[in-house]
Length: 336
Image (cartoon, rainbow, N blue to C red):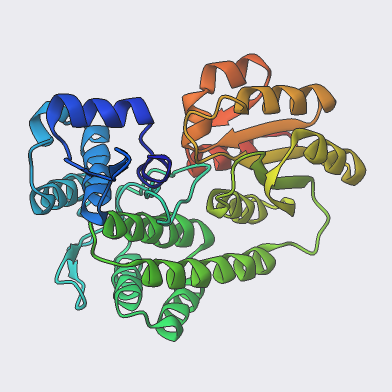
C-alpha cells in the first residue's frame, strides 16, 4: 500500500474508498491478505486522480477502462492547451501537440515532477516554441539523448528566456508527466529526459547569471521534499530577472537554509514543495525558517504542497506563489 500511495499521490484512506465504494481497481491478495496492485492498477489510479483533478466525479469515471481514462485525460489536457499556433503531430506517437498545456506535471511515482510554480501558458505561444516542443517530445519518445539536447539548445538560441521557460520547458515537463501516466513512455525514457533537462537547466542558469552584482536569492526545497525541478526553474527565472542565485539543493531543514542565508547575506529565499502534498511538517519548517531570518529577508515558496498549506504559510509571513509568472511579477515589484 505504501508504494502505491507514493506512486499515485493518493492517500491511503482515499485509495481504499475508491476501491470499496466505486470499484476503481480490484487488487489481488497475498497469502497474508495484503493487497497486490498490478502496474495497470497503479496506472489507472494515477489517471483517475488526474481525471478527478480536472473536475470529473469519481463515481462517473471509476468504471472506465484504462484506455478510456487515457483518452479522457488527454482530452482534458487538450482543452487546456491554447490552439494559437496550430497543431503539430508527433511522429513517434501520432498524438497532436497543439500548444503548451498545463504548466506543471504532477506525475505519479517516478514520473517527472516539476514545480514551484506551475506557470500559466501564454495565450499565443509562438510557432517556433510549438515546433520545438513537438521535436523535443519526439526525442523523448525515441530515447534520443543527443537530439533532445540539440532541440533544447536550439530553443535557447531562438527563444527569449521567458518564452523558453513558459512555452517549451514547462510544457515539455508537463507532457512527459502526462505521457508517463498514460503509459506512453516508460521509466527509461522519463529518466533520460529528466537527466537531459536537469543538465540543460544547470547550463541555462549559468548562462543567465549576470556578471554584475545583484541581490542574492537562495533556492532549494524544504526538508522532506526531494523533487528539484521546481526549484531549478525558479532559479532560472530569478537569474533571468537579474538576481544572483545560489542553489542549495533538495531536502534541507530550516536551520540549514537559515544559516546559509545569514552567511551569504541573502535578500530572499525561494523554495519549491511538490510532494507529498499533505506534508504535515511543511508549515512548521517554514515557520522555523521565517523565525530565524530577519524581516528584510523575503521567504517565497511555490508548488502543489505549498498551495495546499497556503493559509498557514501566509500566516507566518511566507509569500506563497501560484506559478512562475507570479514569481516574475513578485521579483519585478521588489525595490532596486
